[in-house]
Image (cartoon, rainbow over all chains, first blue to last red; front, side, top):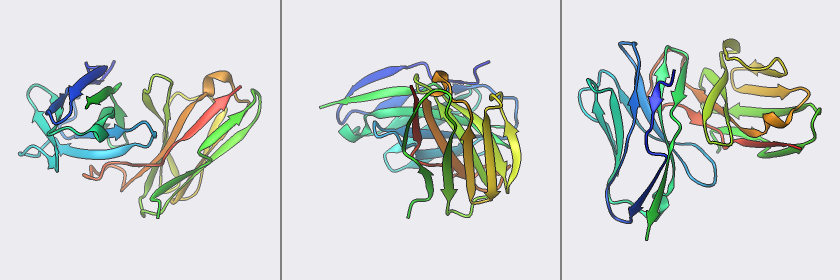
Length: 113
Length: 116
């Protein structure tokens, strides 16, 4: 069963607008971590932001913030003031047990000039 | 200095051949992983090693054999390559197994394997 769901296979956004990438997850673990990764066309996986399940505040890293709604099991990524260089695949990921992280299918984001 | 380095970056080979992909990390991490990214960009874990010990072996054909000579290295050997093995293979590392660190996993740049 899919445990990380990213419902937006692709998005087009005008430059300088804010973007929200959706992610919902399913877990029975009381403690878990949530991540977002960016994969540009060059192919590398770039870590963006992390949210622990017990963290009271939403994580922020520069223009990235994670809108964590624990009761709804959602962990949306918000990118403020989008830039052309934000065009990439974005993956939501979650810890599974102690051993690994699992990924959603990704959202391809296109920033339009 | 590259934190997680994989070689080669590209690998084109014929069906039936045997090939290896090497991975090294200089982050002092205890745990290393191999992930496979298919043509639809889906990332799936294959193996993980914690301090040279195999921890995770997902449902992967026996033709794939990881080897970890020390905790800084995790190599992937593939026997009798098939067309369906074509994918991007990512090595990754993380701090101690069982800890959720805000740094997450650090990935290598990937190896694009094409089997013809």
